[in-house]
View 1 (cartoon, rainbow over the protein chains, first blue to last red):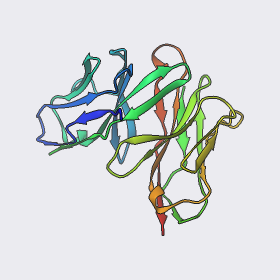
View 2 (tube, rainbow over the protein chains, first blue to last red):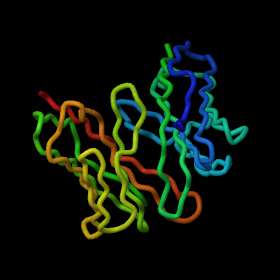
View 3 (cartoon, rainbow over the protein chains, first blue to last red):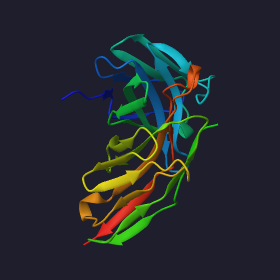
Length: 115
Length: 116
């Protein structure tokens, strides 16, 4: 049963520390999304990639966030330095972009708490 | 631009009641439309989809019809169960060109609680 795998599931860190979240997309999917979910803002798109190239990262605070796909089996989202306002659930999703749109499959998320 | 608007929650129903969650969209082209469901502590799961006007998506007793004339994709279920309690998200996938191609746009989600 193919699925998107995210690690870690939970992360508690102190303000100022670097945080790295990892995602293994479903094999064969050429599109990867990073979303952040909070009660106040709902689901926000941070970045997305097609064929490992970043297409849109305008939703991401550039001064502290970075997203990369070093290879087709790994996507990373880094926050440096982390701040309490970054506390949220971060979701990775992958999909196969087709002519009738992209159907995304979500991982279970990384719950980040910055204290 | 592209956007999705869905009804504010929370929605609270008794078991076996009829459910409607409204969703409308704006899009520059002819997008595909989706409903996703999120159970507590989990990621979003695709519930159903429709790729062109007048298509009806259905799954697990839920249905939604792609209405181009009203730019709507309302989610319905004839008889809800306690196990349907979750957050429901309406979304569209752009068929546009360039960087928006394939991008997903989500509504804010609607919390559904079903009581026995």
